[in-house]
Image 1 (cartoon, rainbow, N blue to C red):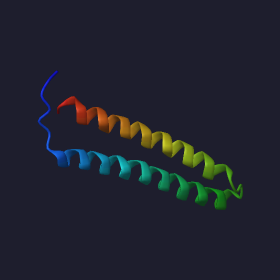
Image 2: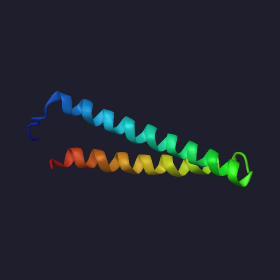
Image 3: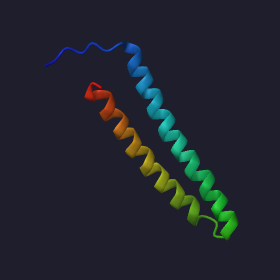
Image 4: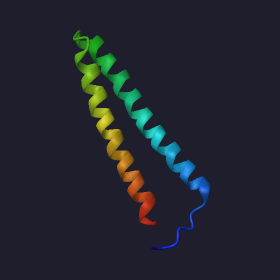
Length: 73
């Protein structure tokens, strides 16, 4: 097992970045979905679709961020 020489504040930075990515992607999905619902007049369809797509993108970005953090780069 290799020695972990990371500063404790790096964990806080990682958790803050994860929170920002997930919350930001969900908010973007909700706002874009609501706007498209108003434009096309189909009330919950684009809200749910935008939320699911942006949530999936946020989870993908989070996984890539954690992999980059633990890769040692």
